[in-house]
Each structure stands twice: as C-alpha cells, then as structure tokens.
Image (tube, rainbow, N blue to C red):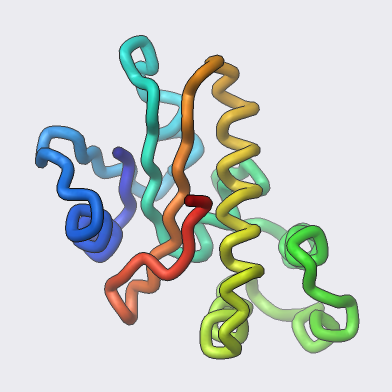
Amino acid sequence: MLYQGDAAKRSHRHLFSLDEACYRSAGEDMVGSVLSVDLKDVSRLHISVCWETMVRMALWTSGPPPIHEVLALLKRAGVADGELSPFIEADARDLFPWLYYGKRFDVLRKICNLAKAKTESKLGKKKLLVYCHLVSEEAGTIIASNL
C-alpha cells in the first residue's frame, strides 16, 4: 500500500485495517514510487493520495500537470466545457474545492478510475488490481475511490 501523507495513511488504515508493514510512504513522486514497487508477490496495490497526486497519476506525470491537460482529463470524466471555462488560467489545485464542495463525487470517482487504468497499463502486470483512493487532507478521509 502506497500512501502520500499522514491523512492518507490514517484514513486508509481506518477503512482497511492492514498490518503496519503493508504501508509504504511514497514521498513526492508517486509515479516513481509506483514504478519502484517490487510486484513479484503482489496481486493488489492500494494507492491513497491527495487531489494533485491523483491527477498526476491519471496523467502519468511526476511534475505539476499543465492546466490544459487537467481540464482535458476532467472533460473525459464528464465535466462540460462551460463549467471549466473559469479555470482556464487556474492552478490544478484550484479545481479540487470546486469539485469537492460542489459534491461532484461522480467526477472524483472517474478520476480515480482513470488513475487506476493508467497505473495498471504502465505496470503491465497481468492480474494486478490497483485501487486508487482520493483523500481530502482537510477532512482526513477517503472521499472517492475506484472501488
């Protein structure tokens, strides 16, 4: 289980009750951390992260994603062009409060699903199940998942 930040670990552990030895901090580069996991004896990989990192995973980038790529990702997740127009010059982090407080959990779940699909395709191991959990650091809980 890879996590980023204490809130991600605590919220995942609260729901899944895995042994402490299963948890591994990913640091800032989740893509690099995922690629460094020894998958030999792994059939399931849980990833618990905040908004910006989930977007990075869905786009498979280690750096801050360009806003036009984030907006394209949100369009794929079902957000209409007109809804995104105020965010053309925004930072990717500015979109999370709009989605979260706007109760757009369907979109947040779709982003988790896109991150799962991208991660599985990049790892290329058959029969590996990836579970992506989006954590609100403010609330300290998992607010969306691909489960």
